[in-house]
Image 1 (cartoon, rainbow, N blue to C red):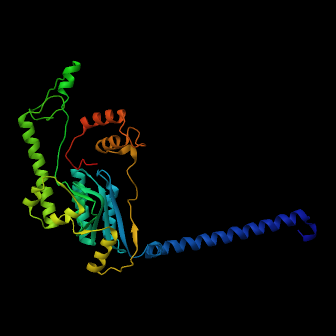
Image 2: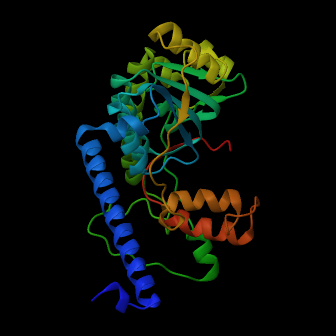
Image 3: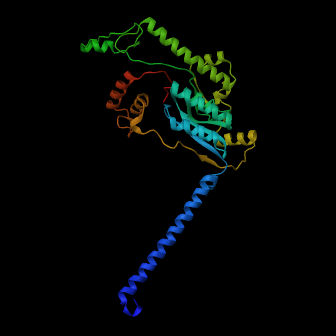
Length: 327
């Protein structure tokens, strides 16, 4: 067909079609180039080098009730393998928590300390399981008004037997043995039940003392002599639980003097990839939250509903805790 037979509309449509084809050809080439570049960067590790923050000191926060926290454990493992992390500062403000969770956290921190210089800074409270975590650091810094110590383990359970008698409720239990499900909240504990529980606590306490003895170089008898006492940061130095007074700047000075880190090295917050959603909190954590914050967790109050729910959940709470009740 000759150009003379084409209408103006047809010519315009053909030009649009050619421009459209040219656009998509160019777009396809650009996408292909970007894809190849991305693949090369991924294979060579160039993408990590381009997005990496560079050499830095990682700051990790340990706050609130210590519960099972796999994302935090994963983070600590990742920091130990990160070549850009030159040291780690563990910033502590926690009264402690579940004994087993504290043990898991402590073990992960000890392994991290074997890979990187690890210094602990107690800003507010670092007691019980939180102090155990802090002791994984090679150097512990605390404020004068910080609270440390409370080295110990405990188990608590209510006895509502008199209350049940008052309201006329009788509980019947069929157990496979005298010590099964003992102590029970529905009757006073037997001497044998208390003895078994004391043995369990003593076994965990011995492990706790052994770790502090190894990490801090304190005699086990001295640690036991503390009898769960809490100390201010200044008194913590006197008894060997703290190395220096101050905050993060003191920790950085220590890392500079002891490990040769640049005084101007960047300190970056490093947090777990994901936090535990509110709906998956443990019973223990929920109890503490409701007592401290009220039933809805939104207002700072001790509400009647919060106390009721806390008492209900406390009856279901099982396991040993390493926790200071001063807050």
